[in-house]
Picture (cartoon, rainbow, N blue to C red):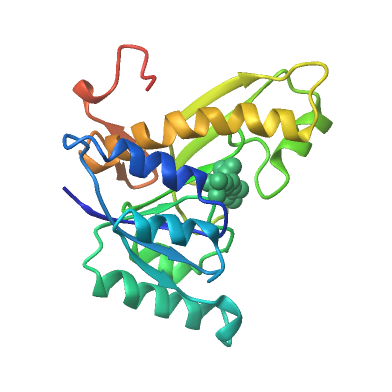
Length: 210
Ligand code: GAR
């Protein structure tokens, strides 16, 4: 089972859903480290109580992105990390760092990519008037929110939705989708091949949905 790090910046509810899934001894990833660029991230406390090592690297203490990423990379290597899972990690990573972890780093983004990259995705969806919205798990590439897609989940947009109601509906799907998608990657059921995801035939259902 790949030794897996979860990177967070705040609340950490996706991290909690991953740790919950990993309580099943058959879960194919072993979560051993939680790292945050914000030492005050509430999720770090939960991770420590769940028995994970924690790494708090305050990005404000580093002169630039490259220095922060070098420290993060060193921390991941010191813990023998094989797989990196970004879960509400709100910091752009340098191309050098991303290339070093190519095919071994995944992210969850709160929209149906390639729609609504960046931040405030629920406001973006409401402004665009889409009737379906959702979340995407993808391999991380240097371009922000542009990596090859591993899994998606869709939710309806209701006429009376505001940003908060829509975010909550999407988040419930994130908590279901991310543990399944990380399991798929950790077990080799989905892997990055160049700029495509290759799925093992037995890993996904007939319709390719998780
Ligand atoms: C989640 O909705 C996640 O998809 C999003 O931040 C939230 C974190 O919540 N991530 C991004 O926007 C990444 N650019 P959590 O800390 O409770 O998991």
